[in-house]
Length: 190
Image 1 (cartoon, helix red, strand yellow):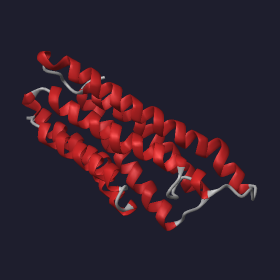
Image 2 (image 1 turned 45 degrees about the horizontal axis):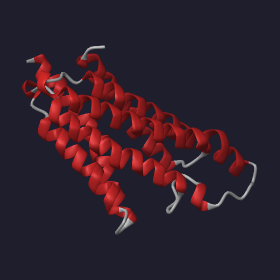
Image 3 (image 1 turned 135 degrees about the vertical axis):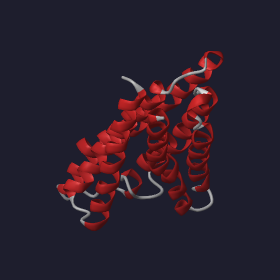
């Protein structure tokens, strides 16, 4: 798949993600929770595809391998967490079973949230930073990849001080991905 196609898919996915987040905040019902789980799992898969689609400078192929590994760990962690939420946690809650908050998504501290934060904060942050090391300089988005990576890492390490600092990370992997896709599409048209 070429980088233009991948970035177009990314923009569609980002749009869907933000619509579902809005619906989740407004409605907060089981359907929007399920949609949020699904779009998050698809986003994890997409991030691996995006990192793999970035054009690479020949001298920096090892950085590409590391970026793909980190994005893959993010995808594995997030898909594992949201799959558990879909097949176990939400059905138990729907049946009235008292699931402790430390096993629920959206609660902190929670085992599932810690794994999700580890994936999207630490490993996606590292994937962005290592992508900045290897991406072809002609694309001119290295700075944007470094910024997205730093925002993810700040959000991840910020939860040590205040859980609300986590919300810095979605600017990196959510809004940042949309900007990366737009920037690549605009540069490729020129």
